[in-house]
Length: 371
Image (tube, rainbow, N blue to C red):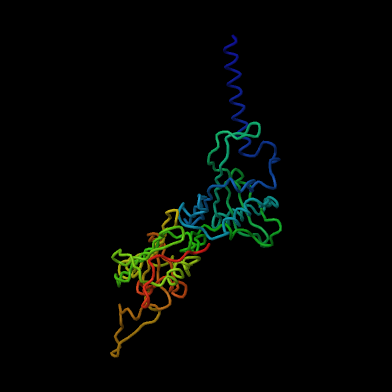
């Protein structure tokens, strides 16, 4: 046998051995499961996580994405403050208590098939590390597992790690009395932040309010300098005679404005009817970085029925709209209809005439505002 054929034969043997090794390692026959570790489900560094995808067995899914502006749902919708951080902390500290007993595997698998949540974690990771330096860093799916129901003691959860499908585990969070499954919610509404507006006065570049019912009550407030603003009427004319303190107070109200609840169960036909017929105001806020938040407000039917003196039901009468709440849509996303309380939003619904002074004519800019 010549040298060339010998090299080819050795190369083929290495490939075959490598394939056998890979198959045995993936099937966990090799090493007799000695590769089992307490932190098999854990991520080592939460700062490298870029995306988290979760889905249950009933087609409910949520994709959490890390952006320059913080964590978002599907790159756009803000997430509840602190909720992703709690999930990441859980993912970093979760530990394996023990593999499930052989006698319980069949029953656990039935429960997992009905109620498990699939979890995919993506991180910025190198292809390999040499001399403590990572090469070919990019987003990679680094961990996949299935979070199952709580154990009978309610002190842990059943879970299955990808690659170990034949071996369910009992996992737990050290120092936490309870089970962690609720932190792995696949429901979008559980993650959506309740904040509709959260912009500081000094960060506001422009506020544009459009009154659908009374167009002449529309107005615009624009930043004119480092800490100065101008007021314009519906026709775009700058106004000199207005109450500067009212404008300052109004702009201060755009901090921490939250919705009450998300109307996720409303029928599509009813949602379309609301959007088509009951739009009464639009509030648009642009910050100094050019980020725009636009809120469209829609009237809500009264919770009570009204009848005339003859017993006939009264429909479509403005005075019978709900006086406590209305609907809202943020940034044109018609798939999410929010319930908003007037109690929290009344000060943002002021008409243009609210700012006009009846006394001495004032300057057309606001006084300097401190940070």
